Length: 388
Image (spheres, rainbow, N blue to C red):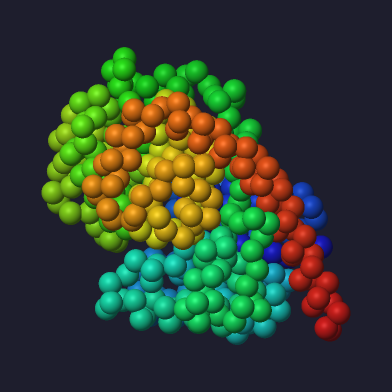
């Protein structure tokens, strides 16, 4: 039985970004171990995936001494478990996991690339973060960018040889679960709970964004665009995500606006994102940097119209005025116009959402992505066997 170790920096990434993947591999004859920092999600993930979890004390910040300790612990884990494949996801887990797997002699070392922090970093951090990416890729045997745009960026910036890069299917790290993100399968009690939290007026236009409330997710531009828009008194802005003021914080002015504005609703988090999407009229994804955004797959599966920033990742899925609206990243005034357009042109937006839904059903259903990943694991095992 081949053995696979999947690593993310924090456990919520195993829960949200890789849901079902470990169970799928186990059901197809693999022994699977999950690894991340400690967190309250771990018992839930172990139960959902049916595989064991090991804690390595990763941090998301730059912490050299702690990082060296994590590399040492990972080497010990790999030597004990003797995995056939180590597969990492998220920047810090990728860097430390790939270095440790290489030092431990693991033959197949895969890093899934779902976004590059250096893209949105200031000049003081940019060089350091680019070097971290290069170290990750140089210690990997294959790098799997989860979108064509990311692959082109890596090649253009000289971060990795093209020969190491491979896109799984048409992109995405995990596809979308069409049984969960489906209007027919929603539960009435969760819809009622979501409605009670939003408290929409009878004719309110609901604008939703999903994700961490940090600067490089474009939250500041979205809040300003909404507050300045002509539709502010006919709409509600729902921010589904938690503040993360220790990393990439929002300005105090924007936080105050979010907390005080009667037309803005902030909800820390929920496992029932599909129910909020069902109650919304448009999803806005204004991020400054992105891999292949799961939230757009989910919105598309729910036939929810989308407005997105013009960045790598978003462009890999959304085509302007064919499957959604695209505005220049960080351009508040253009985003404001897009919100007003979506309010007035609802039939047009629904047509775009229908086209996106068809594309997602054809290319990004979760089981198809899992099968593609499994086929590539087997390919790599065969290649190693031929070389032994």
